[in-house]
Image (cartoon, rainbow, N blue to C red; front, side, top):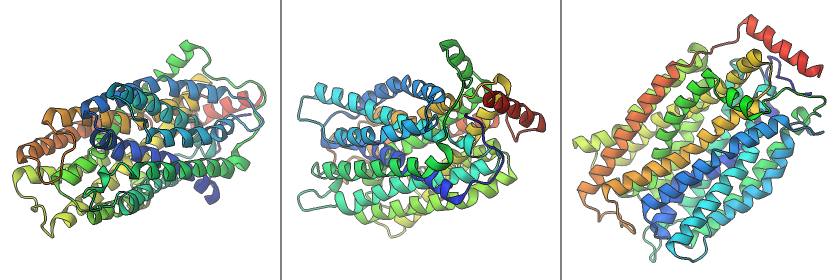
Length: 476
């Protein structure tokens, strides 16, 4: 039988196992967000706007996959439960598609764009087959309003750790500057090694997470569990008002974060002219911000309702994240090469990214609350379907970010095969302005939407309704 979890604290070993699987998502997302546009634009030699548009099309195709996986996961009946067959089955396809994405065959521009479209789609689809069932375990782990945020700290921490460890490996070991390639990021020989290491770690993280949660959560499903089975029921589920409001907030927030990641190498390499050492230090700052978010998110969540906490954190993220570029535009930022530049960027990035990670934690925790409130109203357990919609928007961090970043690079006239230190100041100032404006507008829209989210801690009436659903499921 499949029931919602009781209000209780989750054992630390289960939190660790539940979180460890997001190492795969962190590596994929970091690769898509930080390197994919740069690789296909500056290394392979395709126009940035065409690469961005191709990733955008792959994202649109993927929109149809996630709800299907979520709904099928809700309806799966096996001796391993609803979620774990999907988690085990996705491990090898995730690794293989991730490996192929970074090894395009030699072909013309059109064929290479087609290859990017197909592989970009399959990388996302195979990761969905793991991540949607996996994150859908959250409502089964605990029904406690605050404990869900505590559990999610581990998921976000491992996701960021996986991505940042891979980023440190990339900057510190793979894409190092050499006499042949003064900018190591433009060395085509480094990307196959990057793909191989990433694929191996992703495979291990998925398998270990599935095994680690198997004993507690992989229970046989007996009888008939009420889910959204017809197309009409699926659409009705996804039109649930709190879900729609939360998705609107997540869309704006993810798009803001996606642009930031997709333009990272352009901004830090060309605008600020960071050295390899400065790039490596940047990954340490991001990791420190992940730790800081892990520590502050629960105290913040206990003082404010989740939607208010998310709105405040969004505002902090855009204020500190865009500040270096406003300072550059006003002529008050440290000059490139100044000993104060790197600490200046690091300090603002640390605060802004701590707030941005906290936003994701609160959003995911609110999604678990949505599943319980919806079950109370409809009598159906549709965690997979709801989290599929949310996971699609999480992946939009890279997809929408790359698409919008490609447009920005095209609008500012950023050339292919550019060399740091040689671009006109006017081009770099336009890039700084477009990035800062985009970040602020998307962040303000996200904060407004979060404030509209209507749900809070479950009332006694809500809890009674959910227990009724559980009894009906148990008796099915």
